[in-house]
Figure 1 (cartoon, one colour):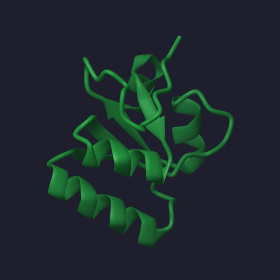
Figure 2 (cartoon, helix red, strand yellow):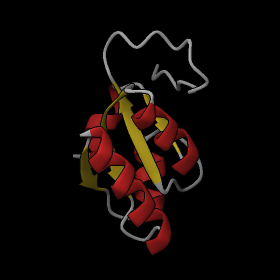
Figure 3 (cartoon, one colour):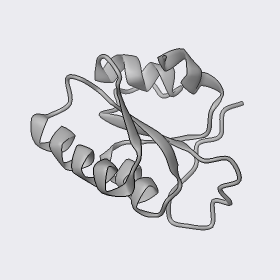
Length: 95
């Protein structure tokens, strides 16, 4: 499932993922299984309120690699098609 992220527009990290969900820009969210429990619970609540599907994502290192970054990521949000990027959510476009 993580291989899907290679060609998708994503944001990584807890704060950016939460912003994307709250602004309605997130299509789905991936959470690393080794992220801190407190962070996982916070993000799960936000996703539940926003009606966003959450997927387990293995380790933080695996999720970071799948998103094309050189560090681990606790979470990542796949952005909806047509998201214009005009909000504070920063978009990492896959090349």
